Image 1 (tube, rainbow, N blue to C red):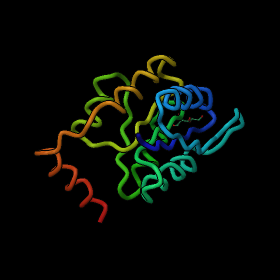
Image 2 (image 1 turned 180 degrees about the horizontal axis):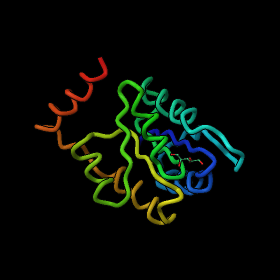
Image 3 (image 1 turned 30 degrees about the horizontal axis):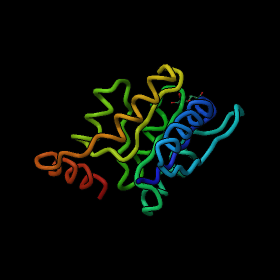
Length: 146
Ligand code: RB5
């Protein structure tokens, strides 16, 4: 089983809690990086917490949530080795893993229905990277970090 780091800004604590419960109910280990309440916080701080757990190997992959998913995905993608994918439907969640080997799923809590967010987490979790020609492209993405 995997260890999954999850984090959100003030737009996403409720969604984060549902995702945590769902993942734990199927035997995954979840590290909850906050935030836990409605008070306004800055989404880059939570992208950093989750990204660092993935960079160090303490977590296998992550979920990040903000209002649209946009800001937190931009922030996470500034971190070396992080491939954060903002997904809106099952197809994008599947492709994010199969083709892009994404290690963070980003969700917009003010965009998606709660049930849709859970479905995207399930799809992301169940999909594996196809490798092959896609690995070359991932390598080129990481060359851009240098
Ligand atoms: C916070 O109000 C909001 O800007 C944030 O959750 C996110 O949508 C940013 O991209």
